[in-house]
Image (tube, rainbow, N blue to C red; front, side, top):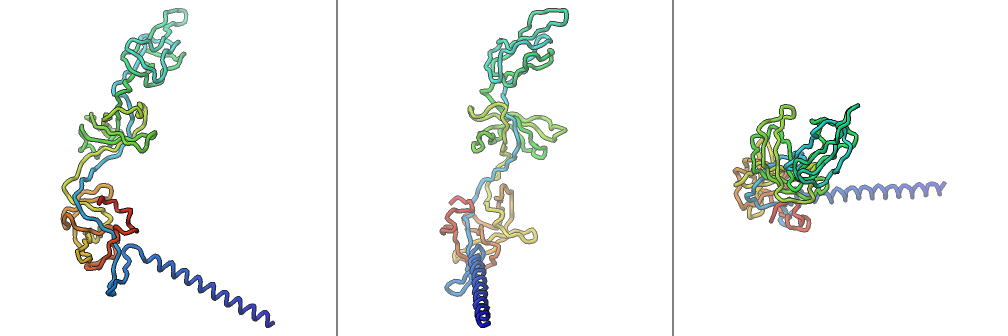
Length: 322
């Protein structure tokens, strides 16, 4: 009986120790998480000091853009048709073959039951490369049925359809980047050379044609391309990250760091925004230091500590060029 009581006492002491350890662990985790942005710490004079990240506000050009899908094709291509209806009995080329104008592409047998005719050659109307798979031997064709296509694969273009809402900014000369699945990290520069005069009534899009600025053997006809078309440039204004602002009742505020390391709240007027970066039309001056992280818990006159260039912020995660 005494042994049992002693065992119970030991178990109780162990349980208290476990509970105590658990309570200490939870308290430790909670305490360690208090070092994030906007969390105040006591300064040497007993004042609360808030850790923030900042940037020097400057003028920057924002490039508005539209993303669309495009088909890479040869600039000059011609469909090849037979002179006579019949059955293909011989194909002299294959996909990718190079031909000269006048070369024989295929032979068609125009014979009918009970009637025999000489085979009819199909000639290449232009010089270039075979850019579509020729019809197979034995295929019945008419004079209006395409046998293959010939194109100039040294000069490629991209055909892309742009949604109707962007029609007002479409014009020749606009610059773009084109990427393809085979080389996802490579951007091929291109320029708009033609804009369709009409909007497609079914898709509600307008087609544009872009020419590559430089020839590159990595780009092939038939590839699928992703087009980033730059439509407008917004210049002459200060810019800063939109999520660095405080919004209240549709009014936006920024926090400026004064020389005495206190925060001053300023009402600002916004302009155009691109990819989370917005223009500041009024309320700030070029060269001022604004808070980009840690602003949510600041108030007018709050003391701050700028940790932008500390070891914790050495990666300059706000993306601002220093």
